[in-house]
Image 1 (cartoon, rainbow, N blue to C red):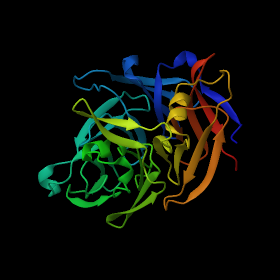
Image 2: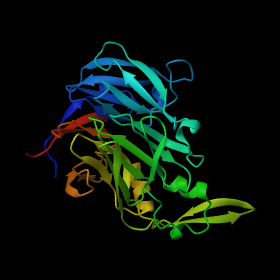
Image 3: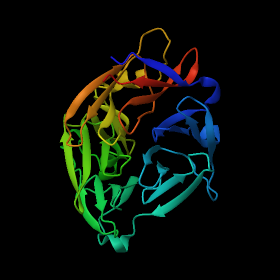
Image 4: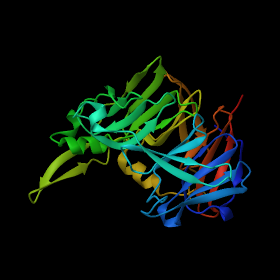
Amino acid sequence: MLTESEVAVPYDVLRMPYALTTDGQRLVVANSPQASTLIDVYSLTGDSVTSGLRVGQGPGERQMVEGLCYDATASAVQIRTGAADAVDMLRGIDGSGLEIDRKIVFDAAACGSDTVAPASFALRMADGHVVLGNATSDGLLAILRPDGSLERYAAQYPDISGFGDMPQWGVFNFLRPNGGVSPDGRHFAALFGSNDMICFGSLDGDTVAVKVNYGEKPGGIKWVTRDGYGTFDIAPERKVHFAGNPVLTDGHVYVIYSGMNYADHSAYFWKKNDGDEPLSTDIRVYDFDGNLTRVYRLPMKIGGFTVTPDDSDMYAIVDSETEGYRIFRFSFPD
């Protein structure tokens, strides 16, 4: 149990925080689109450093931020804004002025394959390799070489017999990958919906080595037809394994693990701390070979979280009935 914690950023300076990352000196916080300003940067003690990135579709604007991770190789933050074929880089988190630039990382001609369909996310690694979510049945991920050509598909589909006659697009929807890259850019990790599946990747010479942990077979979802239209039935007992985005340091991968059935997890999602019952969160920690190294339990329910690149501290968004949003710092034991 991680019990040593303190408030790092109080409620009265936060907007509507959703996700965050850190370079070890600052916290970069992504807000809900309802906040109008998508990015706030704070010191580790809660002082405002800078803000920016307006909600919109104009130059220098984005409609949302789905996730973010610090990229030390570029002195910037990679932010996922829904563009499956591009990487958005946020610069100026030191207070020099936030700027965002987009690099298109997928070109069909350069890729050399007509079976890559970018979907969900794109991440850039230190040597220029790119990891894409891929919507075709060849693999849930596609890895591109620095020159844009296809190196390999990765994360082959698990046993999907539990999905019945669901069409390919529906299967992908329930296995939709989301990922992150380590600050040094040498490693990535991806989760696949809420399923018991996690992928680890590391630079290995001029290629990317990949390991996938497959656990419990996904199921509890059926494709059914009602009134001539196809739709989904989700069984209340369907198990939710991982939740949220993976968080990477230069040494480990951190993920929130639920283990609840779908009905209980859905109800738990809306609960707030300081309510009628005590809440908690389990964090699993893996090395880059896919080995589970330890499990932490936090004595509160958290939303987005991040860990300093050196694995020393965790920062997590906490929502409570009495105080609203705050960001807590948790110290790891030696």
